[in-house]
Length: 502
Image (cartoon, rainbow, N blue to C red; front, side, top):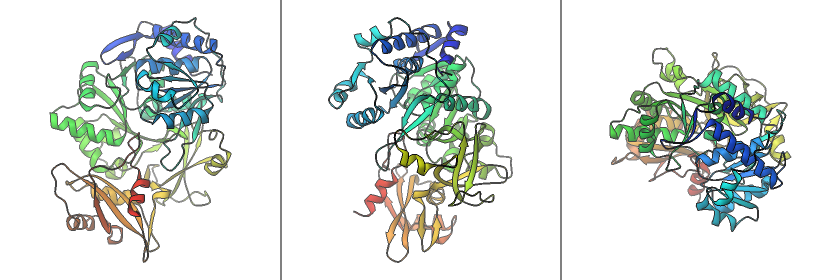
């Protein structure tokens, strides 16, 4: 099954429905969206691109991005989306590693990229692009469920990124699980792509195509709080995928403007730790619009979900524990908490989160060693530590590599970060372990103070001692203007640890 059949069906049944928007301007209905994608597929075929070959996308969010991506699938090729914030050298490395035969590039990035890569380029908006999307349409290619659709490169915070192989089956199962476990979608909805289309936001276009909903690219091409609030009010029934840091920024800005988020229907958040204090503030301000999911590139968007009801409920006796969790297993997946040998642990015991099912990747691209280390006996070892309660709610602790062992005792940074984030003078916090001759490691907290706040270690110590065990409290506090983050908003703890040993 070719996932592009969803666009073909939407166009056949709902061709006149508005499909692609730049801001509030509709630039294509479903009939013209599908026609442009089929024409681009025909152009790819005319350039010698065959089924299964890789075509890269190194572009900012724009309606043409979606045409290119669906055109790649229509042709039976494999999309290789690359974050537009990467350096041209980094993008060229991904293109080379993927063996891509062509790259679709935003015009403003084309010159720098062309200087780094010998692979052919087509620039969005240029005459060659216009010719491509007005070429003779290609009949949709046949693909099997296990054929590759998307080659996703991990963020590479600890080295070269790895290519995650994502199949048509994975995308289909993930989308259907979304309807069952995350949210409904109707034709009246609008997916607003404020996060990179190369990542989760792009994957979430699938279920909105299936339901013939609207697809909106903000004119800024990225995440701008004022723009999001304006578009929500203008378009109505808006869906956004956002990292927790984006939710925090949106909440802070909206409160400063007295804006309640009119027109925002659903915000799905994922991609990093959502601290309890932050989601409590967001729900109190915006209301019941939030849903949390937990996934990885290796199991895209499809491990667990915390429903809108669970995020909003304050009546259940364990609502705080539920809100601090990432929810329960989605329909397309099985979740286990395993010990070091992968054997299941009792409820409440911390171990590695393991998953299996039709949303799990078949392996990394041309990397058998990494695949063998991550996939064992049918299970994906996520590298995330956590526990599951008797009702199936999974609570993340930390990445296994982020665990701090001090004096032989395990300390999970997130628990310390949660405590710190409850202090009104703390805007952001990140906790890492620093080498120590006596204890092996000690806890160090990097703090970004709230605007205008004056903060000191004695105050933070007293605050932590009211909330967590004495041995878990930080031994040092380092104040920063901002935490180092990658292009997806994840804190680079590798950089923080490196700063401690310089």
